[in-house]
Structure formats: structure tokens, C-alpha cells
Image (cartoon, rainbow, N blue to C red; front, side):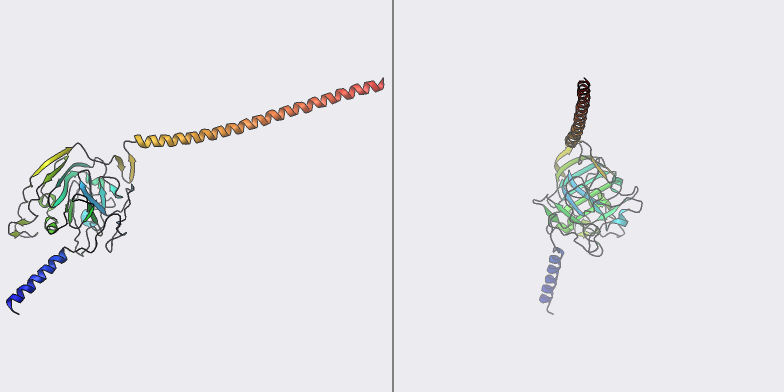
Amino acid sequence: MPPLLNFSLFSLISLIAHVNAQTYSATYLPSNAPPTTEEGQAGTNQCGTGLNQTSNCQNAYVNSVTDWCIWAPPQPGPGSVIGNTERIEVAWCIKNGTGARLIPDGAITGAHFVQTPDFVQVTGVGNLTLLNIPAGDAGGELDPHGADGNGNPIGGLVFSTAFGQLEQIFEWTNFVSDSQFCIRACKPGPQAPAFCQHIYDEMGCEWNMPANYDPGFESCKGDSGEPMGVYGASTFHQGEPATPAAHPRPSSTSCTTLSTIGNGFFVSGTVISATTPTATATSSSGSSSSATRSTSSGTSSSASATGSNSAALRVGSVNGWEQLSMAILSAVVCSMLGAVMIL
């Protein structure tokens, strides 16, 4: 084969490979996702919007410091380490309305959102044993590229409004342990696979996503920095004899701090209740009042019934006296007639 033709064929194959790498089987929104999106999926992508702390929803969101999700086990127990459950993880979200499980208020003690030209991410710390992760679990990585071509978790979808309208994010990565988490959602485009690389599953959050992991809450703009594992013209591959240091934390600006984040619900195990039940209490009070009114009405009805019975008794008494009086009068009249006849 002539060298020029050989080069052209190689270029064509490379182009096809690149195009295929950026081609996805389907694009969904939460509103039109089917019940499941991958074979062998344990959960669902039709999640609704209700409160359900046993939800098997596998839709996650990364929108802002007050609106994001991470993946965690569906069941508690010592066997629910991330390495054992990565295929069946479910979404746990800060914000209500996704149909996923709620991250209990107070579980997250630090969350730092940053938006860059190429991705958005949230990094932080907390007591993630409240998300069914066993104490002492060093955790692992979740991403859409499992060994069999399915995601970890299987069928897990990620969505974001960070780059405009709500859209599916095809390249994302999430590390989670019993006390630390990080999740990055990459802007759809040619740089997405590089900035959401998924081959460094043993390197953890701070190596893959150098950022702020301190307690506290903030939202920032930031630079994209360097893709994980890329050092100039060379690329590190996990397992090589020498492991390079993590990239420096990219610079950030326009940071806004928050005192806390949460959803306003009290979550204990699978039970959810309002922590500030003013509105609900008013409604409940109103319902109770209605119930009380109904009960009062019932009481009134009972009273009316009692009154009717009393009236009936009174009528019965009157009729009885009238009959007795008529009997006495009849007796008197008969006695008088008898006396007159004798005379």
C-alpha cells in the first residue's frame, strides 16, 4: 500500500474512533427516560418527584452547591462497601424533588461547588455513614464506564443545568468514602473524556480532583486546570512504578459562602419528617380543626339525636299523663252517673 494511502487510512480510522468515542447510544431527560437504560440495572430512571427514602432512583444531578447528588449504597450493613455495591448504587441528593433519596441535613459538613469552562464539580466531607456507607470504608469510584461497558452503577444517569438548559451529562466521575466525596460533571464536548477520566479509580478524590475539601460551604468560578493524569506531553497510567503528585488546585474566583445547605427535612433511616413543620402543622391543624369540626358535628348530631330522644321521652311522658288523666276522669264520670242512677 502506498505510504500516502496508508497514512490516509490510519487518519480515517483514528477519526472514526474519535467520533465513536463521542457517540452515545441515547440522550435522555428525567421526563422521558425509560424505566431502565442499561441491561442488568437494579434501580430505575423513572424517579418521579416524591419523597421516598427507600427510592431506587438512579438519576443524579450536579447543578449548584445547594443542588447536587452523589452515589451511595441502597442498603446499610458491613457488606455495603463501595467496592461491593458499585453496580447497584442509588442517587442521594441534597435537594428534594428529584425522586431520589435525601442526604440527611447535617450529614454534609463541607461542600465546595466550582464551575469551570469544562466541568462543574462538588467536593467535600461529611458523615457519609448516614448514606449507608460502612464506617471505615475508603470508598471507590463511580463512573459511566464499567468493565462490561455499562456504568457503575448500571444505568446511572447524570443531569445538569450548569451549562444552560437541563441536559444529560455523558462524562462524569464520582469518588465517595465514609467521610469524603467528590463528583465532577463534564460539559459535553471533545474535552469531556479527558477532564472526566475514569482510569484512576485507586487514586481518590484529592488526586483526581484537587480542590477544597475543608468544612464549610461555598460556590465559586474557577479554572479547569489540567486533566487528571496528564503531565505535559506524557500521561500517567495507574500502576506504573512512579506515581506523580496531584496537580495543583486550580485558581478560583467569585466565591460565595453559605452558612449551611440542606433540604429542611429530618431523615432518620427510611423515615422522613419536617424539621420546621410550621406550614405543615398549620395544614395539619386545619385538618385537625376540620376533623374536630367533623367530630363536633358528629357530637352535635349525637346531641341532636340525644335531643330527639329526650323530646321523644318528653312526648311519651305527656301522652302518658294525658292517658292517665283521661282514665281518672272517666272513672269519676262513671262514679257520678252510678250515684245518679241509684238516687
